[in-house]
Amino acid sequence: MMKTIIHALALPALAFAFPPFHHGAPSASDGLTVSTTSGQVHGKVDPALPNVHQFLGIPYAAPPVGSLRWTAPQLLDQPGAQIEATELPVSCPQYVTNQGNSLYVRDVLEFNLQGLNQTGATSEDCLTVSVWAPANATAAKDHWSLSTAKSSGLPVLIFIYGGGFSTGGVDVPYQIPAQWVNRTGDHIVVSFNYRVNIFGFPNAAGLGEQNFGLLDQRAVVEWCQKNIAAFGGDPDHPIVSGLIMDSGTAESPITTDDTTRSNFTFVANNVGCSDLASEPAQQLACMRNVSAAKLEDFFATYQESGATPALGFTPIVDGSVVFANYTERALAGQQAKIPAIIGTNAQDGVPFVAYQPTGPANQTLVLEALLTIFFCPTTETIRLRQKTGRLTYRYLYAGNFTNISPQPWMGAYHSSELPMLMGTHPDFRGPSTALEYATSHAFQDAYVAFASDPVGGLASQDWSPYTQIGADNVREFGAGVAVQDTSIGSIEALCSGPAPAAPL
Image 1 (tube, rainbow, N blue to C red):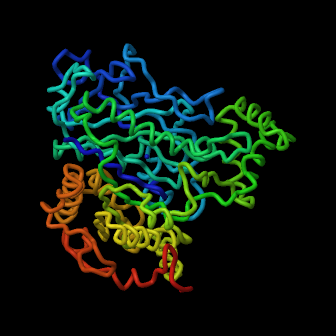
Image 2 (image 1 turned 90 degrees about the horizontal axis):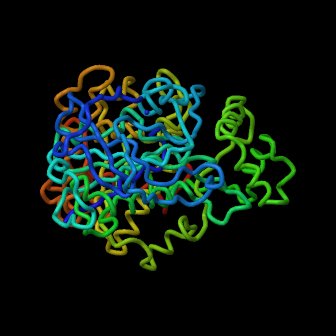
Image 3 (image 1 turned 30 degrees about the horizontal axis):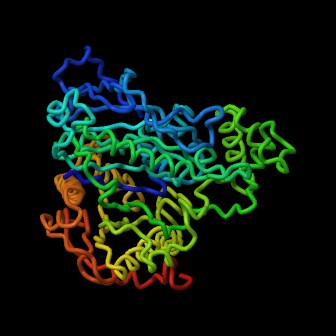
């Protein structure tokens, strides 16, 4: 039975369109044509990666434009449509600054859209899903009927990019999984675009629902359940069989504190929809007629000016998709009863303090960022899972490789594990070392083993469940050896619930 695994990123893993490989019309037996609810999809093969079939930019929902802006995604049902899925899709509207103090715009642009230090091409018509499948999997299932696809298939990992719900997209160079699938040939990876910033999380008074970016994520999972058989997966499975929380958890401090919805009104007042705060429906109607470019241009101008307060649009507690009481809900048994891998990076905090070419001047601030944003929320999530009997594995990524971390002080900074997972680590700034390849392969193989069998698959990797905070079976990747077990109890002891125990 195929297992669908969600690999979720919440915080900055901030992207480069590879030149498309132009091929002739796909034959009836080459596996590059598949039937989906979105239409007849025609994919491609990159000659440099012959073992993977790539289906890029398949629309999964109606374009969220005009009257559909700020509405829940509407899954497509157009099986007769013809879709050329041979180029990486553009991402949803966003603004990526090339100013300020960040290693993501100074040293490692490959985490940005299209590998740029500025906003790449975007479009509001962006709700697309991309699938990377082993060539032999799609060739064997060429022109399958969705109603008769019943045989066992490959494990599927659905990758959700990060970016603090403000940026991110499929066209991020470090996060393209083609090399991973080409190497192993034993799993399928799905990535997709979802709405971010004001388009995904408007927090507008005229709306009932608000968390459209999260609803987009749910829609893709449903799309996969309906369609993954056509790419070599098994449709007979629970909608999600396991979780990999790689960049924060529900305990992370990521929800908005804009309870008065002033950010949306402030933008409205500056793009031609002024004096409508007392008429939410009219304000919303006006804002739906403002072009996406004008909205993003205002946001960019405002941010670049250094004006305060800063504008932000992130998930809103609504009691339906996002909750305010995760601890209480967990203790009451109101969390998914599925296995999880939960991890952090050894230097997760580095990108979140003032940038200096020689490294952060204040290591206390680095530790505070590590604990507040990532480590303590993760530890609390694990503690609650242990208390309620949820099967959990914990890891620490600790690699410090020069072609990913060009300055030694960067270490295993936040998101530096993603090139290791995707196999893109040798693509920029020189070749990878033998240890780097070994670490990448160990990381990849652990994920696939978990996806194949979330309950028992990691036994093949000699990785034991994490049943007690402070135990010595945290799986560590890249610290001098590819993989080993360690204890991080001394750092866990710095946490009290999802926050640091005391001022540092």
